[in-house]
Length: 195
Image (cartoon, rainbow, N blue to C red; front, side, top):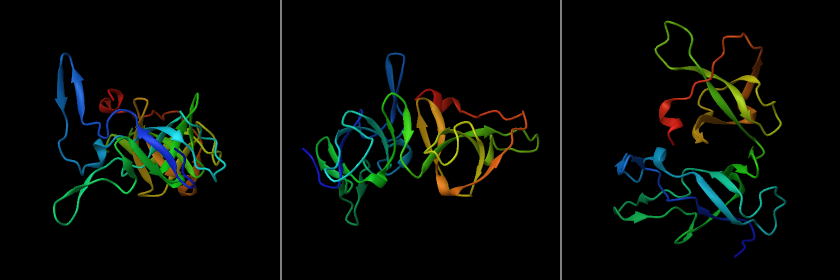
């Protein structure tokens, strides 16, 4: 099956990542369908659009928007699929719903960078992370990988990729490149590492 304008994808695993295996038992972390934090964001590409010139190939793993696999309730309380839903395991997504793809290594799509948060070192800060700063992990070429950057407020969106908490930031919202001070340490919470 091929689409003229859409990528045809299927989820890698289930639609939701809301359980964790602990020993011989399974722990359910969340039972709500509307919580975006437990929606699976990894998919496998079945086919690419007919009219698109893309580096993404069938079989590649992609990171997609959290609403692709998410279910919701309409105004009558009826549970519904997202507009991307096609059939049981098939979804149709547009190019702007894909943020990164994996083909031997992770590569963000044009317009996006993924940034590792920094550990807060200020003794008076009660937060674990330094706000609005990070080290570039995956770049679309706008900035270099391993650059220390700053970005605008509310431009970051949290993802966990390969056990690392990362912020997806639109490249145009990266506003400054800092010089390394020598005390920068990335922050990765334990809950991200166990995913």
